[in-house]
Image (cartoon, rainbow, N blue to C red):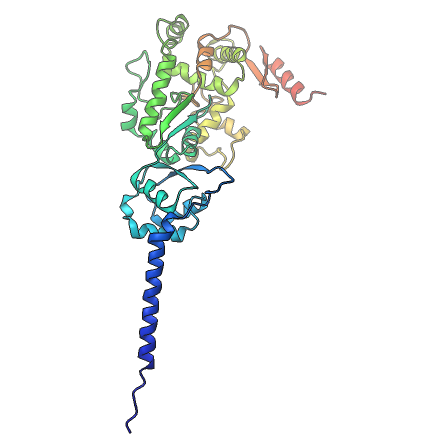
Length: 379
């Protein structure tokens, strides 16, 4: 009798294929029916759900976003959420460039809907302290869920954005050059922004608040402002620049006015030469602003060294350059602006920090050096 062909391999392959198809159908059914409605990691009757703002970056892939959601505790599994979203939405539907509110109690389907429809855009409250520079402000805005830090820093040097801010603000000079950045005019205050607000929109609010809060002070109708304009030929920009330095040095309104008086003495008195402010914060800011072009700037940290104060390559180094630095080094509050306008008249040229928020003021270099010695060696 002829031998029968062995059909077992073919039958086994068929059974294996059917098993694989069945498995795929089951997995697909679970992803489309059961998985989307599973409670999020934070869904619990014994704890409050955690709310978070997720910023979808322009270059994010679905997988990168899913991994970040898993790290934030918004979804249980980045792999499952990626597989589910691949089935139910297109990659280009994600609201890239936006910040969306999500909760760790939301189901995978609810998370996906928010991130692909823009639902969940919220109002964020952010406080910008006095004396923050633009780099710190960009970081604070990012941490508040309002966008990526680099987006804000890029907007701050974008000529088109600067033009929309209508610089120079409150200036008495029509020939004043366009500032390179809005440093000094990002007014410190508490703000509320939608998480889908653009960097340009947020910057307009900050600069607009500067104008509104200073308009009754930086005006020719204000006698103290008019005096500085007439005697020093200053505009609002120079006043704001000095106020930004006072902001970094002073801790109280009374001392702010006295410190402002010290700086103005250094700039104007004939018995103090050369006319240099000799302010450490200006050196530090120069390193932040132009780090790659200044040899003495440290690669990490920002502790002032003697080589930094001696480096004339730093245009903000007020130990080596006369007069004011090229522009503000921080964003001063109204108290520091008023301190410059209402500076205390005196004969002091020096001050040194006591370590408790106050300063010791001196009229001569010898007195100043003696004060430093006492503070360093109190015994």
